[in-house]
Amino acid sequence: MSTDLHPDMHPTIARALEIIASGDHEKIATVLAEDVRFLPPTYWATWAGRAPVAAVLGHVGQVFTDFRYRRVMGAGRDWALEFQCKVEGLDAVGVDLITLNDDGLIGLFEVVMRPHKTVGALREAMNARVKTDPRFLDYRKALS
Image (cartoon, rainbow, N blue to C red):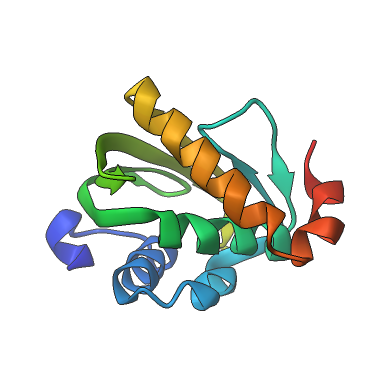
């Protein structure tokens, strides 16, 4: 799948796409830097650290349905992964903007998404999930 989207894809990006396609979101931490920063589309804040970011992305993987990457663009350290999905039955498109660190791991992960109504549905669904996940009592310290 991944080489169909971009023939010269960085191995970390290819591995991330494989993990997402498999639905095994527990493995996403293997491609994240220890000091990774994640900027979600739902609010103006940043999650920092491998464990909190992996937990957030794991929940996103459960909220998104009919998820697929449409295009992958990039080279070297900077990548843009265009996707489409549904949230609570609402259509969405978005882009994962990823920067790899010197070790080739994801150091920065920012998501932009539209339309606004679907982003609102994502925010509500994620808030409901995070409130029931005891890990986030500790992880909230990773939000700035």
